Image (cartoon, rainbow, N blue to C red; front, side, top):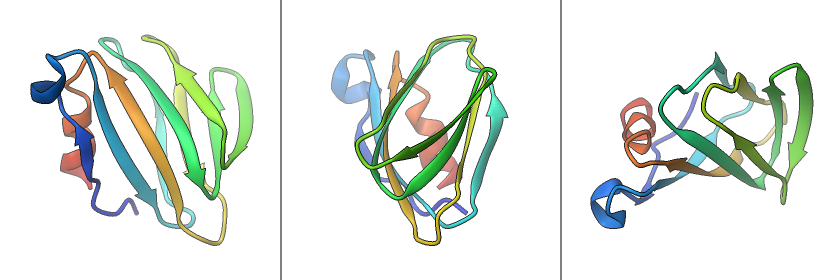
Length: 104
């Protein structure tokens, strides 16, 4: 489960250049593998332990890890820790941040 997601910056605030959200993922919650055709996405792990599927790689990310997914790049992630994970997520161009608001 992903908790309510505060939007820190929206396209309307950035001239459409990017969106920024702070995501709180509960333990064992997952974002299934997917591809974005229209946007790049980047994650900065603030707290917790998140397992990323990044193309063919599996990466365990902890606080301070930065992940970047370009358009068309397969990725998914799961909070594998026993505590909530907190992640800053950037989307460029803006628009994708609205998805975070809707699912949260």
